[in-house]
Length: 348
Image (cartoon, rainbow, N blue to C red; front, side, top):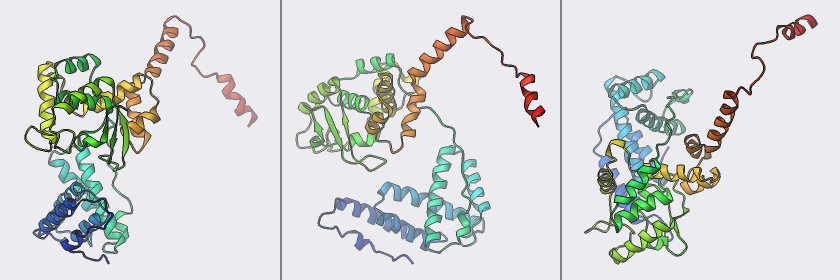
């Protein structure tokens, strides 16, 4: 059985621990909120949340899992079910209920994955029977291609971006391919102007650090911003009167320049800058395995999506073959030869 830990246990920090004290304070808030939860199976939920904390999961991961599982346990209670007697039909009913709420299939899949992880933990702790997850429910999602900004639109966007912080942020995102959260976590010490590289200490999704490089125009924009920024701020990018900067402010800033460039109708989200970075490098001939390292992808299959979007080799091969077809350079027949088909029958 899992040993319960108290919020005081979370305040202990090993001498050489890299986990900041603020994480313990944030987790303490999560457990205090958990104490107010009133759902059937709360004791199991409590054990699981503490299990996630021991695994050093992010606070956001714990909060999102807690929110989904409270919803799931409440659904079971309303339908007269419980964890001990959980069946596949209960999981299917939960999926249907979430779809009826109008959620996207990707959101439903995310919630289902959290429920599966919770049930897997309970099976390991022998709190629910193993038969509960003999056959997991798999939701088949459509595989969308990443959306990049058109080259002409990129030039329009850059031309209207003001100097200083905004220009440095947009060019760094466009030339490094880093995620927004990674950009906002950058410290001045992580930027090496002369070498034109940055150190991402912890990836936003993989939690693994990596090295990225930036171009000359991004270097010039960074130099200009370093002369204007608050020298006392630890983070590279900050708000005018605050030491930090939030995602919402970044999104509003990006949308402002889309309006100036008259590109609002295109519907480009801020994350398009990352997709544009990957697409442009592939078009320029960068090998897929190198791009994978720059983007910080765990699997090269994720990076391969961009190859489907900007495969110039495939395009060239298609038009070369099609030109031959249009010139009448294809000979032969596509009909099966019946004489050849009768040879095996004769042998038999």
